[in-house]
Length: 224
Image 1 (cartoon, rainbow, N blue to C red):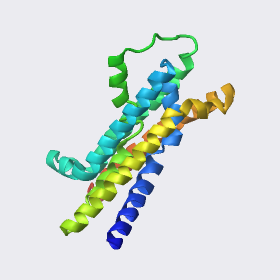
Image 2 (cartoon, rainbow, N blue to C red):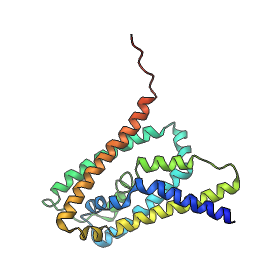
Image 3 (cartoon, helix red, strand yellow):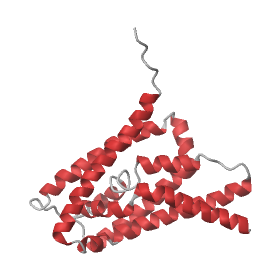
Image 4 (cartoon, one colour):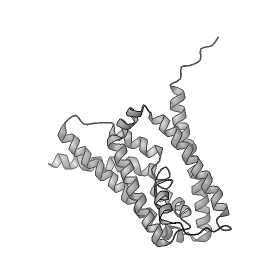
């Protein structure tokens, strides 16, 4: 029992340590705040909860069935990275341009249906749980234990690690306004623009990681 408990704790820490730096909920808080500028604080809190639930489901599915899904459709992780990198680049560029016009073109509060749609795309996928974190989760889940006991222990540890990651996402997004308030108007503007630019760079990096892996599989051109 003691060995099982130790293995569970190690699995939880391993999953959280692998996912949190890539998901980066603290760094995503300014982006979340910028993309929900037309929401009330109550609506933003509800949206943060939905995003955390969506993130949990995506990471959980990637851990336990992600490798089987990719195999079923004949897809590889580099392909997912290329496609996801393009989407992240588009979202970062859109956020940069939209932020410039936010002060001059206020929009009405979004409807409940629009918020439900926005909670999944683009706020959960790909801005919070993107191709990088999905590929890491698939890689972790691809290492299947050989015994049923180890399968149960690792499964519980993976579940707890994903839950911890989702809870961190909720806390960072739920209190993003307080975090930004401490920076002031000028500091918030700087952080929002910097976060949007970093998001664009992350998209380019994800795209390049996938493209590099695909290019490496191509046979070298022989000189004539």
